[in-house]
Length: 317
Ligand SMILES: Nc1ncnc2c1ncn2[C@@H]1O[C@H](COP(=O)(O)OP(=O)(O)OP(=O)(O)O)[C@@H](O)[C@H]1O
Ligand code: NI
Image (tube, protein in one colour):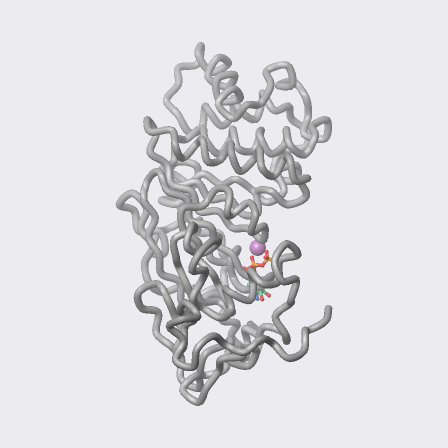
């Protein structure tokens, strides 16, 4: 930024993802989820600095030049399911034209079979053939989502990256979109992995095998989805707070605000909001065994002082 000021938009993120698996990346607005996605796709702004490594299918992404990213990564190694499909689609061209163009760009389909391949691509994402000649503004949110998904699947990329794929859809459509994405990774012939960025914990629960929780630019916990949403629940106090904030759970918001990413504390970034914070939280916890916390929550029976006391006063919205 100007004046030598830095924003640590993502400062620690480490995970792996296997074919056939879905990892949901969750965390409050502004914690760095989309920046992480942009880094993988080589779409960060020019002034951004990256370090570390990210490998998909043998290709190192963070060090890749624009030519490599354009020719071998986008669409071919990583298929992007965008946040607002209607805005992502080209407004002045029909869905069919966009599918055909993508088939031409990403596959070796001979010219005479392109029309057929585009129809097949639509079918794969359950986009109705009767709507292929429509323009994006003539589609419902759900159909625009399917059109965008069809485009993302064309290059048979081993990694699908979906940034908020269910934003703005009603509950039914969220469930259906999640189930369709799940179907694409369960399809054993293609062996895809899905990294799904979402605010929607119900969608994450529906689709994910594992959950990664991001706070202030760091992944602070990665855990099995069944354990996360069920018993024993997450171990990081922030992750527990996210769940407790859900209307269908305690409806108790986490007090306070996340820190400025341009001015992160030296220690644990969550300490200021954490009811378990102690002196050692002044040093930053390492991320080990799927967790970055000095005093993770274990099951209540294992707590040193027995179950934690009930909150004295509920925090109000
Ligand atoms: N080009 C940029 N210059 C400066 N700061 C940026 C830039 N891009 C992103 N940031 C900052 O990085 C942080 C992370 O943003 P990001 O979009 O990744 O959040 P997010 O977790 O995806 O949030 P949301 O859930 O709202 O989409 C934000 O605080 C944002 O202000
Ligand atoms: Ni985002």
